[in-house]
Amino acid sequence: MSTPNRRQPPVESVKSAAAASRQTILDTAARLFREEGYAATSLRAIAQACDMKAGSLYYHFESKDQIVSEVLSIGVQRVFDAVKSSVEALPPNADLTTTLHCAVQAHLGALLHAHDFTSANIRIFGQVPDEVRAGHKSLRKKYEQYWQDLLIGLQQRGEIRAGIDLQRTVFFLFGAMNWTTEWYDQKKSGLSAMASELTNLVTSGLKAVPASASTGSKAKQGKP
Amino acid sequence: MSTPNRRQPPVESVKSAAAASRQTILDTAARLFREEGYAATSLRAIAQACDMKAGSLYYHFESKDQIVSEVLSIGVQRVFDAVKSSVEALPPNADLTTTLHCAVQAHLGALLHAHDFTSANIRIFGQVPDEVRAGHKSLRKKYEQYWQDLLIGLQQRGEIRAGIDLQRTVFFLFGAMNWTTEWYDQKKSGLSAMASELTNLVTSGLKAVPASASTGSKAKQGKP
DNA sequence: GTCTATATGCCGATAGAC
DNA sequence: GTCTATCGGCATATAGAC
Image 1 (cartoon, each protein chain N blue to C red):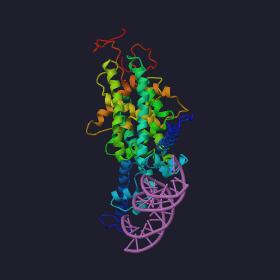
Image 2: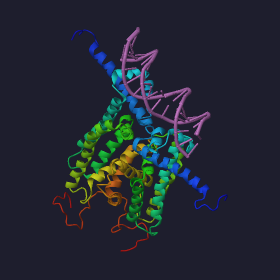
Image 3: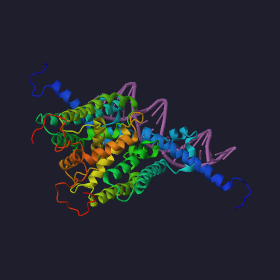
Image 4: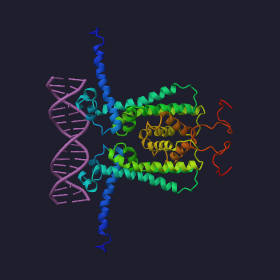
């Protein structure tokens, strides 16, 4: 308002300059937290990787806890948003395999494709101070509940067998997906193939079909 | 040899006294590493929890790295031994569900039933110094290979469908099992029930049967 | 906004008394 | 075997110059 003739309004320039530094710090912190862990990542290391000095971080953040807290929030939110928008783009009566593949691929994509925030969240959540962790449990709970509601809906539509504990199923799925941060090698296998494999595992299972209408590839069959 | 008349031979007494201290340190370290993480657990904290002083630890161990290294080894070895001996007690032609339930229950039991070493291993493996981690990859690899060979054997006997990537299957299983350290509540659910649930998930899958011989509990069925 | 300088405290590790 | 005392270093955080 005060200097409207400038091509770049000074107020916004200042704001975005400060915001850019802030964002650089968060990006760098997320990467280091993911690589080194929470306690092993010092503010000096974060600052150095940003071409800054440790004291300067305190212009943007009050403490190390505040930085890690923000990194954690962004991490969950990105995965949540990715899964939610992918699932909402599906036709309303999509079947179990389609829905699960879509949600699994979105979760894995957010977790593994160059998103330091999401994998940092998985890796350091158990290492942060109790107060920080306690402050993030509700958002994590909401994300868990979203998946559980997704499966409940599918079960009510007859897509999932009755008699299955869907809460535990969600936890098993989360484990299988989040553990990929420990072994996934982008060069060896595509993300889509991995999503298909996991979806296939939890929808159809490993068990061989009892050979009723099939030709029976193996000669050995115990009982008719 | 020098004082054979004593009821407790002095050499063994001395040896077991030192060994007892050593074991106390390892037990305590495993618990603290599991609870607080690697970097956040100081030698002072370990010593204090053992009713000792930090300097005394160096009589038994050369460094913090040596302590954590030993904790890691014990952790993998206990899970490995538990699974191996359980599976070897099965009849040689046990089917997929029986075998998998047995192995899963053994792994989960070692991981969750008051074994600080095993869950410490899962939690801090990604936090320890690179040299320590590198020194333990081969043992972990052997354990992974054991599971993979188990599944390969089942597939060759026709218990598992063809066309499934068994290496990825093992990783997914490991994820589902190891992630239980993040949410398992001993008071709310038994270990055996959890093993059954996971085994059922990965053998039979979630998918509802196509309603060929069933009564069809829901009225809604899209196509015949 | 970022710097330098510094306060204060814990870290892993060592030396030597007992 | 365990202790006390201590080394050098790095941690988070703060104060004030520019």
